[in-house]
Amino acid sequence: MTETVAAIIAAHRAGTMTPAQTVARSYQRIRDHNDPAVFISLRDEKDALAEAEALASKDADALPLLGVPVAVKDNIDAQGMPTTAACPAFSYMPAQDSTAVARLRAAGTIIIGKTNLDQFATGLVGVRTPYGIPVNPIRSDLIPGAATNFPSIVADFRLEWGLGNRATGQLVDLAPTPVAALGRDREESAEGVRADLEKHLDRKPDVSHMFIAETDAGEPAGFVHLLQTVDFFTGAANCHISDLAVAPGMDGRGIGARLLVHAEAWARRNGCRFMTLGVFPGNERARALYERHGYGVELLRMAKPLN
Picture 1 (cartoon, rainbow, N blue to C red):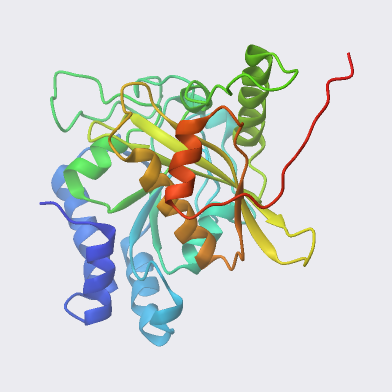
Picture 2 (cartoon, rainbow, N blue to C red):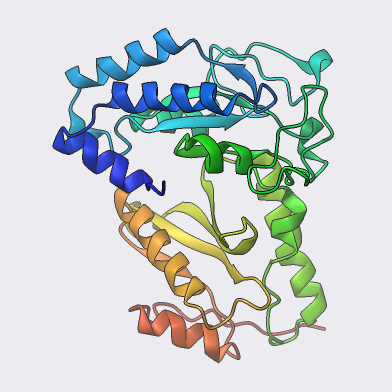
């Protein structure tokens, strides 16, 4: 069965399905799937159902993800469940939610559990973990693949959404290469872009937000990296597109345009007044995309090489 997060939220708002019923259904699918290696920690069903039922007393309009069950990769803190990164010796009880989990809870989601992963999320194959190897739901003769075993989660019991951190290298490899610019070496500029992206993926500052487009097979098709900024002239909240990239072979499929639309929708929801970006003068293709979406020149940055 194919079911989107949007469809689940719509059913909750229409009253054709309650958040508690959706959560109960997820737990039943976990039991039916019967693969103990998918979750490292699974929340008690009664507690999750009680939280889902409590949503009825809240303002549904203020909860954009009303009652959506969510799985969290077990190297991301979720209060009430240990964080192990698939390493028992590393295990600890977090004092609070990570920023991402806190925002998900505030949006009305129900955290179900913590998923298995390659130890410290560095294996990329899904089998380097002492907590068992999840079964590949598509072909049982193959490994699950990926540093997080989300294919097993999504394909089999439809947990609806999983929160993970795609391995840094996979995204850095997609970083855009700047065109030649005044007084700048192209490869040196490209390395600067990659280093900045790697820094944000590693440090995860609160103002930095990454959205990834994936193929049906779960491979990265592109990404957009946003930074929350403050307007120099007014002090208002703005959003800056730091990077937008499409994977090789994915050009011409509208992925860049969809990432741009998603970024703008996110910025509006978060109260941003302007969306800003930078583009090198010679990058006519990127400039044409931005102009089609209503972007225009606001300020011109001028430079002069001094040596």
